[in-house]
Length: 266
Image (tube, rainbow, N blue to C red; front, top):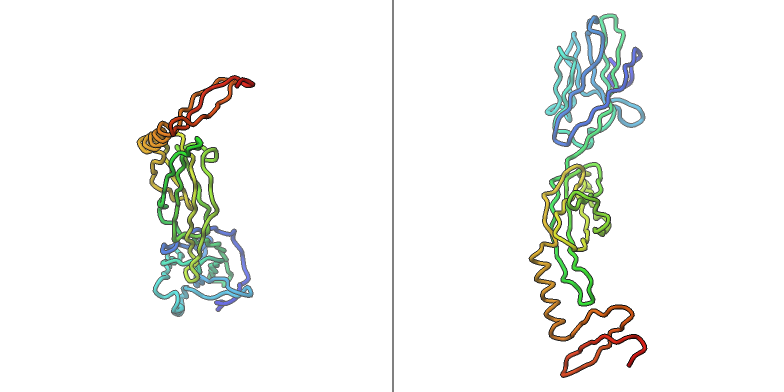
């Protein structure tokens, strides 16, 4: 038997596989159809280049499956495949299938298994919008995008009306946490949007896309603008002065008013 070290023989190309946490993956042993196979071992590489036996077939005797794989590993002898289910991140790594023909020559298939985890659909929440400043500054909205349970770590991406958000969106740093047991990631990020018109905003984490939300809605902006205009109408008279005129402010009857004066005139 050769359950714990690499056997000599023909080596086939590496097969790259990707599985998802809680999903399953199937490894197919590759060899010539003309060969009579009498023994198959599926093994995984561990520390120090050693290999552990997972499941197999021997025409002369049964092979015992280790307890950690017993309830989530099966083998199809006719198809020479192993199916590994209930995947975890710990299953990621290098696997081998070693097939022995009737002359006890071996053929090896090598598998590189990558395990990922799908992030939950991101949620955009905790949004709050400011009113326009009395100095003329634009209103803005701050939102948070969050998603959890994914692997590997992913950045947060934003989309504003399908265009490039870089012109109007200011992004803060990511807040990330990795679960010490499952090693899955929880990711969130804040972003602030300058409001010039109503826009639809979505965020993306690890390929999962949030539902769009509408920010800077017209009604909200109009209400804020009206509030600011009412303030100025009560407190100030603000003319629009052509250049090179200056605005001269004077207080009359408890109101702060302004008139246009040519530069240099009294």
